[in-house]
Length: 184
Image (cartoon, one colour):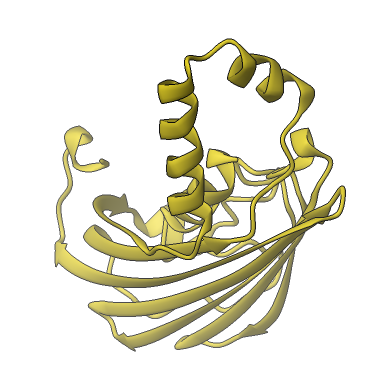
C-alpha cells in the first residue's frame, strides 16, 4: 500500500500542473521549484493473499517490524518530504495528464482561475491491487508567482477497508534555470 502514500507525491510532483482540456493556467514562474509536503494516511489496507504468504515466511521479529511500519504509515503519523522539481513553460501550458497520471486517474477540473484550481481524480489505480477504489481532490492556491500552496484529500475503499489520505504542499520558486539533476 506504499503506492497510496506515494500517490500524493507522484500526483503533485509537478505541483503546478493541471489535468484538463480547458483550464486557466496558474500564474506562476517557470523554473526550479522546491516542494515540501506532509502526508498522512489512516486505516489499514486489506492484506492480499500474496502479502500474507510473504508475512508467513518471515521471522516473528521481521513480521513485527513490518506490522509496526504499517501501523506507523497508516496510523495517521505525518510523513514529510522535500524535493525539487523543474517546471517548464510547456508544463504550465499543456495538459500533462491527458493520458492519465502515473496513478491512472480520470481527472475533472472543478474550478480554474489563474490563482486557484480544484481538480478531482476518480477511479485511480492506487489500491486496485487490494481491490480498492481511490478518489482524490486537490486544491491549488497561488499566493504569488513564486509561492504555491496545495492540499489533497482522498479515500480508498474496498474489501471492508477504508484508507483516508491527506496532504499539504508548499512550493517555492528557487530560480529560472534547472539542470537535469534538479528533479529529485
